[in-house]
Length: 154
Length: 89
Image 1 (tube, each protein chain N blue to C red):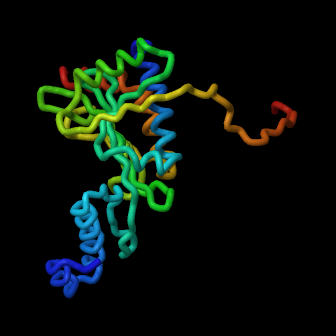
Image 2 (cartoon, chains in turn cyan, brown):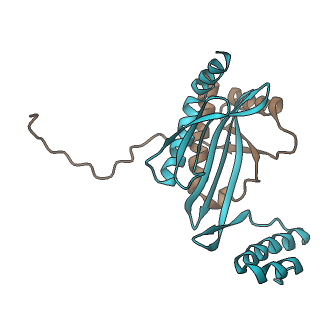
Image 3 (cartoon, chains in turn orange, cyan):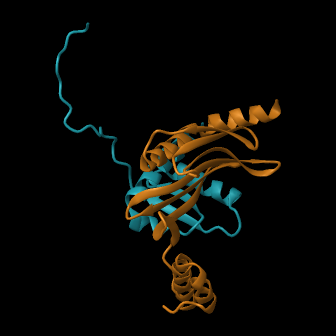
């Protein structure tokens, strides 16, 4: 796959960018041919570009309450995830509880007050934390929603 | 939680686990899809799940119907537990 002119210009400054542009170019080429590109993204890990498989979907609990699930795997291993309970309020969809690895290690953010999360680290591997996150939100979404709405009313 | 919501949560947890354990299945889920779970032999639950997506569907998101044949009965995940009697104190 030939690099685009813009990628060639960028590659003179940063060789890693050219690899990302190559992956993006491949995606565009597949789309032009009418084929659905593989759902993967490129991310940097220790200075190297690696391909990760991204899975993302939404499941409804009831009207105004849903769970957003996203995880990325590399060679079958979970490398990143975000699982979040969202409640519909007057301000739109608002996260109430979120499990993710935004800072490299699994943790839980609880939005007791909108916009100000309480962070709790999880001493679990990414795969264990992801399983725990899904299970916890599926079992306790009703309770989390009640506590959040109660907090807003105070 | 109502009985239908409880069943939805149970199936949802199992679905999440299945997706993680079966990457080729996961690859068939369009990005950002809304998942509707259906369980064979449960018409009331299936109708409820469909009405939930009908009322709350977000425009622009693909909707994916997941029909489940059945759930296996839960089994212990313990491997080779051993018994040994000891003194209490």
